[in-house]
Length: 418
Ligand SMILES: Cc1ncc(C[n+]2csc(CCOP(=O)(O)OP(=O)(O)O)c2C)c(N)n1
Ligand SMILES: [Mg+2]
Image (cartoon, rainbow, N blue to C red; front, side, top):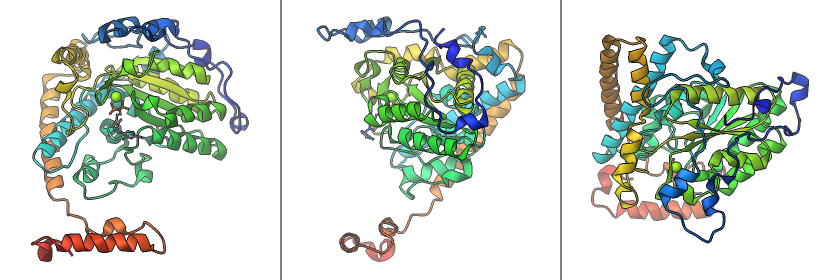
């Protein structure tokens, strides 16, 4: 078991007790694997191989569905998915398939020159859909730049995600329409935004929660450490959802931490748990548990979703420069979509008609995304200079003038520029 059950079972707080409470004294990570797991790096005298470091640091995962699609019992977390019906399971499957289809279309659009860049979520569908479907409408999400599956769960139209990657807008959606903040490129900074928002929720006396998504690489950032400190001290209702996809561009996780990432929570005084990030049911259950802790006054939780980035970091990256195909092949055997499909099939929860209909729906989505991207109007070149200062600024005026001169230097300026 990877969770301190005493922390998990504390009574719900009263509304009066909610505001301004201090951090839970019992909120430690309960991993029985302790911090010795990655002792290989502790002395600093020897360099271990990547494989050796991984073997010694492999703690137990919360898993409800094996890679073969077999449902396994879990005394701690089964209760959190007890109400999941066959229809819900098909819904989770549909979410993952459509998200992957959308993602593949976006990658193709970048290759065709329609997008400047794309950050694929391939392989991380279960982590995102499982956690995304655990949320309530009034919860608030602070994503990175790869949370396309979570955006889908929040009801953000997939085409809206593409405007920024095409370079035609500075965001693409109103964060307050779906309680889904804009994508954040500055690594780890959204953890601070999430913590501040969560502290505000406590002051309002509301019982909604906040979830901050970030990656394994981001967990090394000072912003994330500060978020952990503040959220613990202020008992903020926030879930830190770290997708450990094994890589921060070309930097493997074991070069970033001597302990498994979820164990970092221990030092801040709140629980951390590692969940199989390719198991949508386990991600749903663990995130529900963590959200419930947040709502009931238990403060923050760190969820480490152990998963794999099957594609490149972004379309500008070439992973063959730093990792081998064998690694990807090993993770393909744990594919999040395949394992739920196996479970649906063996338990007779979905028939051929369901899969065929979904295939058709995927194609329709792909077409809609393609057409929407190509139809996006180019922005006014000078819009970037607006809204910098309320009353204007001499430096911005100068930059605008320089840019105008640059635009005018092109032969086709009369038609396209201004
Ligand atoms: C503050 C900051 N430093 C560096 C970068 C450059 N950068 C972009 S993505 C990235 C790696 C992030 O890795 P991880 O947090 O594991 O997320 P993943 O891309 O794997 O989802 C880095 C270093 C940045 N965007 N912001
Ligand atoms: Mg990463």
